[in-house]
Length: 91
Image (cartoon, rainbow, N blue to C red; front, side, top):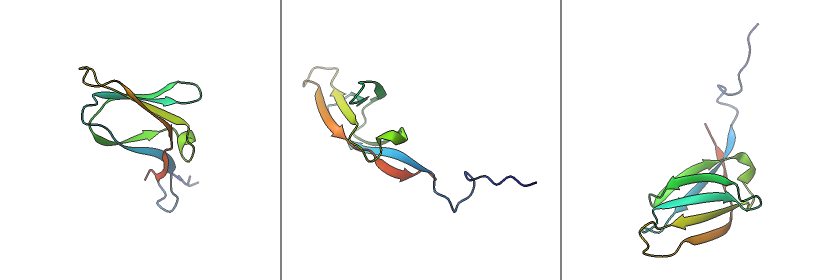
């Protein structure tokens, strides 16, 4: 018996969620939060422009908030609200 694997089948997309971001050059780290529960989805060092894969539930909905931090005190933290991740073919 042959078991067919959808993961290895190039004819079937694997859909996930991705968030492309561009941060202020003075930002040193950021936290991505679920805006309903305030649960931290990601906390990373900021590197200007990047892409982050997030749980599928955030694709197509405005369920995320992002806080950027400057650890050297050049500016106050900034918050972006109602962030939407995009659907992404993960293959």
